[in-house]
Length: 328
Ligand code: GLV
Image (cartoon, protein in one colour):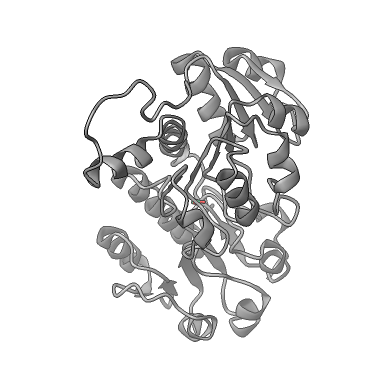
């Protein structure tokens, strides 16, 4: 049987590339060039598989230019960079990397939430600028996380891991909004209560966004939603850019209509809205919520497992569209 060929579209762990080479001819990208769409189309020529990350957009045009493509394995849990309908219609299996990043990402949401609530980045910058000359009673006073109301928008695996930390670790009251409600036996150990979205916005002391990006969730938090929040509240986004209207958020933060924000994802990233960059009451990180060595390796490994299974007659462990796949 002739060996299949795969594209590894971004630089990844060398041992993962080596593992793929045991099965396939591999075109990898150690220089970590971000391919334009034309380059991506060209690189995919003759390849049956693609190992992608959030930076590669796989749409109908890319797929139509490469009808030999059988599987696209994304090293991310979110897959808004993949046109799943277009993949399914062409019999291309798409996979993602759920579960392996859940706890790490939940940890990071707390890091950002706490940094925003306790003004960690802002006070660190102050110290580094040499402006710390004395103690004062109200210097960088923030808001408590323990005992506060944690609001979670989106209650999938990561949302539930955040709820667990809040309820069990910090004694927080947990409210959430999601299209589907958890079963009572899932809610009970978290002390979590489903509320409608306006109630979530009004009652949360610390609101965390963990819903997938889609046309439906575009600007789920805009000026109208921010207006419902407490002026003492914080907003943390570890989900996707575009879920928040960044310009509206910057305006709300500038006018102290909410207290602070922690953002790991941005509209149009890696560009960040200049109004956000100018504010001190927002903590900004470059899309690193899953970035521990162990978790990133587990994600890469799972993406490779998917690719190997998909192209060698196995069953991919974490398919997105297996049930909807048109026969090739
Ligand atoms: C990261 O953003 C992911 O979706 O895994």
